[in-house]
Length: 401
Figure 1 (cartoon, rainbow, N blue to C red):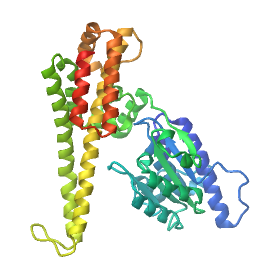
Figure 2 (cartoon, rainbow, N blue to C red; figure 1 turned 30 degrees about the vertical axis):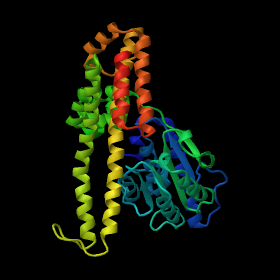
Figure 3 (cartoon, one colour; figure 1 turned 60 degrees about the vertical axis):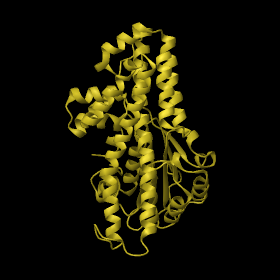
Figure 4 (cartoon, one colour; figure 1 turned 90 degrees about the vertical axis):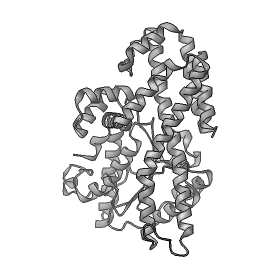
């Protein structure tokens, strides 16, 4: 399959990237054969992919990286780069290509130290591939200092290096960086397109795929998780019951605590799966043995790992809470649609009775205030307000309407 097939609902973006990959291939071929360089090219050294969560920004960047490294003989016969099968495409997509660095973080930010290492790598010539490609999936998490370090590399790129940056919006990236990138905007894919992808690529039953795609309103990763993970479905079902539990102050406080506890439990499960493995691997690398004391001089490395794991748990808990608040926003959006008689398709058809009950019990103005309360809670969490206080304030606002 061509690498562009995974860009669900992004035909325009896929066409632009395909054209750029063809010009990039022509440029490398001309350089290798000492032929005249193309007079005009759609290829450039820095790209910025933006779009709403779940639109597939990182998928687009990885597909483009694969097309740039494609070594299929068919590309010279009109098929173009990006076959999806050759060694260059396959290793780029799975993250093992020597000249494709894929950077993602589960921490709160990307600092100067990590960015300097990326810049150092970007100055190297390709080892085995056609380009040196740096895919930065979380460019919005660069600190100000890290952004300034990256700016220098984007301003003065190495001849065969390509930067692929991903962020939710242009405003999430320093103006000086985004002005030096070619910008591509992805859109939220249609629900039907996401459902079709889940059936075709993941083998999910059509009815389950359709429900997951509708519930997540086109968010590809969340739809896949909802369709395949029973815990995700149970968590979402619990969140959708919250609006019925805020009739009094005690109910509000209890609902807020349970939401925090659920996020903490999710974080604990991830830590048990990931942290233990990381710790054991580091101990083995440092010459330690399970159940015995570590060699001298290794305490610093172990402390660094513990600090990183702690920061990751903080980020995971915040992401889990944000996911619950996103589901809650979608719920009240459905309530508002019913109140206004809108023809917009409901996302939470599995909670139709509850939606209709709340729609009859309140006014559209009250529903809008509840949606605003959820948005204010998300903003408070971004400002590092204590999660329990932020969620308690939200549940009280949901009660007041």
